[in-house]
Image (cartoon, rainbow, N blue to C red; front, side, top):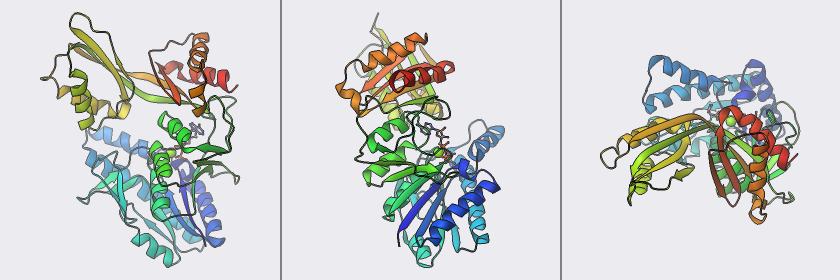
Length: 401
Ligand code: ADP
Ligand code: ASP
Ligand code: MG
């Protein structure tokens, strides 16, 4: 008897019909003789709708109360899914994150899993139950509910697979695997049979929404092989693992991240320690900084521009405000209509001219680049969001065709 962890995203359980379809997949697995633990997200756009509801009440709710609100989305979907399985005559129990043993740190809205107490899940499996766990949530040491960040149910699933030493971890979604670019947006995107953890991690971090990046990080760390597959069609998906048989191509995929805010500090003192103090404070506020650009100093001043996600813009501005007595800065400018387009691939390291080819593809479409960042396995450019889809298509055409 194997232990199978299955995760279903919001699109797979968006209404009663979809919930019943998912229940059918779970029951088939159970009836084939396996133990099944399921992680489920909130139905459809529930999480976004809850965020909108909060905005109607308060412009700046505390993160604790936001977590209290958002965890409700998954409470609805686990109970409905369990009811659907009950009607099919199988023993089932739904568990909230804390009931399933998810202990996290206290960073509300972006909590990290510290430990999973697996006792309850083991007891329920021993009773023969299918377990339905609310993804994206846990509890901190003060017994307050926490959430793991948007798309966090993927991480919940991988964490359970690791903690319970599952035989398989399957992430069901509304596409049938991982493609070279978002198959809903990019013509000619190609489905991949296998992807390495590192390439998937880059793709996910750079905006390929199909998997949450923390889930891939965790899968790599605990060597959990993942399969991304469709909840609507029963066919093999994409396997994510350490070593693949994929031939080395120049680039593996193109990703787009539209949640980019640039923050520019104009007229900073040009003296040692300014960058350290600024980014140290941002780290204290738990802000993840991405691309950083510093201008050449002139007349004793310089400018620093960096990017953060839309979600973290407010925290970044608070951190900067907390520094106002530490260094002088003439102006702070923000722009949240920027997108990051990236190419990813382990093969680019040894191939000169990849960056030039990417820039040429953008130049051909008259798309201006605002910032550039490179590493051994990726090249990212920052462009205006209104041009982002055209840019992804152009870059994908240039490399993958
Ligand atoms: P779920 O509700 O199952 O969590 P998500 O919406 O979070 O689903 O992720 C699935 C979506 O990810 C797909 O519908 C697709 O549009 C998008 N996507 C972006 N990049 C890729 C990619 N490279 N391969 C597959 N899907 C991608
Ligand atoms: N419901 C949460 C979200 O929309 C978690 C998830 O879908 O994974 O971000
Ligand atoms: Mg998702």
